[in-house]
Length: 328
Image (cartoon, rainbow, N blue to C red; front, side):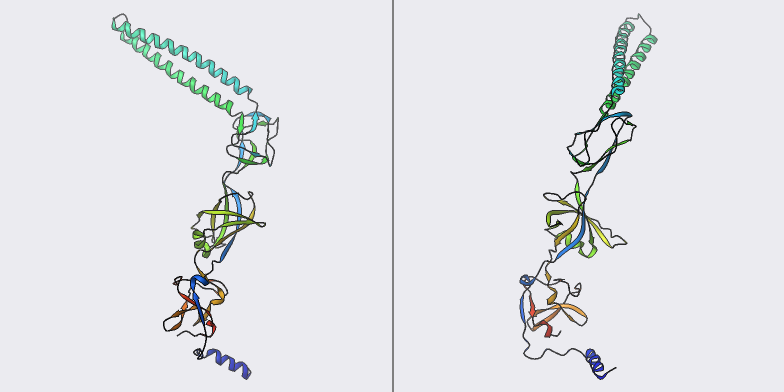
């Protein structure tokens, strides 16, 4: 080791000497020097529903009046199926219901007549019980036929497939003339009424996102306002990130777009150039009655703005000459 290198090494081990007499410094209130650093995270616009609309009955496809990329309203027709067989089944159910109603009326009349006759001792109690059982059975059969007709009509309704929400058609999955079965896919939809922004946030930045008032999504120079919906308490074991979900406050970016989530930390921070290291700790000098005093900031990192922990807005921060000051 050369003499110069050895001398430098010994000097590095010596304790810091007090600032020379006449050292000048300048201070300003924290509220004047504090900044609100921006935080960013990767983000993507997602829909909560990406649905494959399927047939609920077996029938040939008559029409698919939508195309990929088309925007549809809630209730708009997506597909029409051949409904003739189901319409015939509904008419049969109506006829069976009419017959059941007639039998029920007859059973009611016979039961009413039997009640009068038994009171006059013209028929036995056993015959009245028989009429009562026939009347009950007729009413039960009537209820069965009514349910059968409702089921048949419901099957007819299934011949027309409608959009359950406002959406974008992402794909046509069926073909006109094709025979479908229950569960056969017809059209794929992207729900446009429930759009969120999914972001992966550093665990250390999660707290500032909760208190931020100006969260926004940036995409190709455009900015979209956001509000936080929820922040997962779980940390991904691989990426060490937490997932945040946000919703657009006004206009929304296209579904599937990838951009950046940007927000300003609401807590006051001190610029990195004001930080000094003393005794192995980073902090700032603050003005006190006896002169400048070193105030450590435990969460501070080299070269990054530091949260002004333990400092009030009126506390005066040394903004010039702090490099020559030494901890008391």
